[in-house]
Figure 1 (cartoon, rainbow, N blue to C red):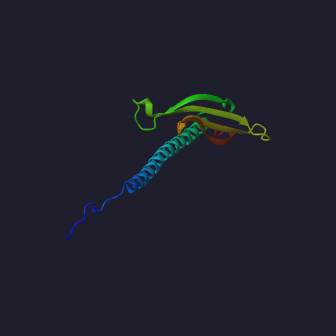
Figure 2 (tube, rainbow, N blue to C red):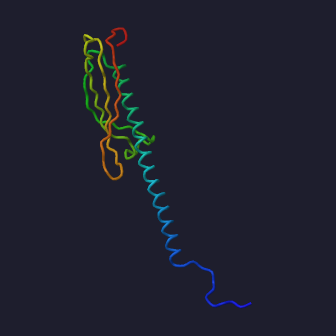
Length: 145
């Protein structure tokens, strides 16, 4: 049996370059999907925390503030999101804006309370101000308030 010189089975340089290019494209797609997923998860977590903060603010007003004393406010908020009170770096930080207004045509019997939670979110390298709103109506019922 004769073996010809140079007859070994191997890949050509073109085949190697094409296969490496395909692997690079797959790797970049997987990496970008990971990055998008990370940003999406962070945004979703902060959105849920903002909804919670807005609901908490409205419930606090409903339970603790007499109807006649309800007023607008704009305060900074910080929520410990990971159960680490000694580490403020992982807290949810933002602004809580409360807007109280009389409902038109109610004769001062109803007030609309809007809680606007604002925070900064880094999305794809751009710092954006995000908002989450919660609105309710509170009646002037002396036996309840």
